Structures are given as structure tokens and as C-alpha cells.
Length: 148
Figure 1: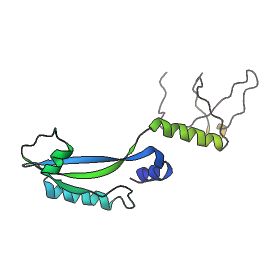
Figure 2 (figure 1 turned 120 degrees about the vertical axis):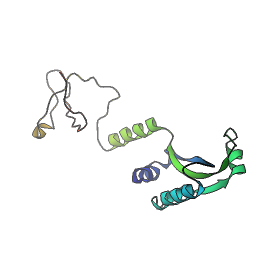
Figure 3 (figure 1 turned 45 degrees about the vertical axis):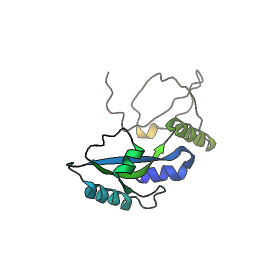
Figure 4 (figure 1 turned 135 degrees about the vertical axis):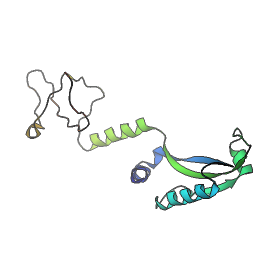
């Protein structure tokens, strides 16, 4: 939840509220009371939330919002908003442009010519003078073991 709020603060132009409707039917494991309690807890766990708080709505209002729901045994629904990142590729581009403004050299395309294990003391490497190519050290904990 912190990440969502951070994103909404840092890139509000990329985030929009997205409404969620949780229909509740007679005989369901979670009735209107449980949905109300769950949504109240969700609101309490997200202080400083920018979107509207939850509410429960009647059967008729639920059907007005979502006319293709099965109306039989519908009691009503929980209704809340969460944030939606509209353009994740735009966020990626903005991160790259920000890195460039802070002095990073960025490339739209770079060919990987090899992967090797690098000792922690050898993370920074100078450009190769033979062919003008750079060697880049990338530390990725998720890379795992190489197969070869």
C-alpha cells in the first residue's frame, strides 16, 4: 500500500482512481456485514488515501452500475476505489529520463554479448579502448544460477 501511495504522490498524472464493485448474494460465505468490516479495515490500513472511502450500496444501485450482474438473490454490494496505473510504460520512460537528468547514460537498445560472474570489488569498469564498447556490471539478486 505504501508503494501505491508513493506512486500516486510521485506520478499523479499517471494514476487514476479505479472503482471496484463487490456484489453480495444471499447465501454467500461473506455477507454484507463481512464486506463492510473488510472494507473498513482496508480504509484503516490506508491512511492518507486520496480516493473516496468505501461504501455499501443497495441492490438497485448495484444493478444501475452493473446491469449485467445476475439480479437473483443480489443483496447489494461493497463499492470502493483503488488507484490504477494507466501507462506503466510511461512510468518506465520517466524513470529513464530522470536517471539521464541525474547524469546516467541511457540507451534505447544495447546488445548483451556475454554474462560473467563479477567480484564485488570489480563493479565499476572502464570502457574498453580496443573497440570503444563499454562493459557494464549489473548486480541482480534475482538472476540466480546460470545454466550452461
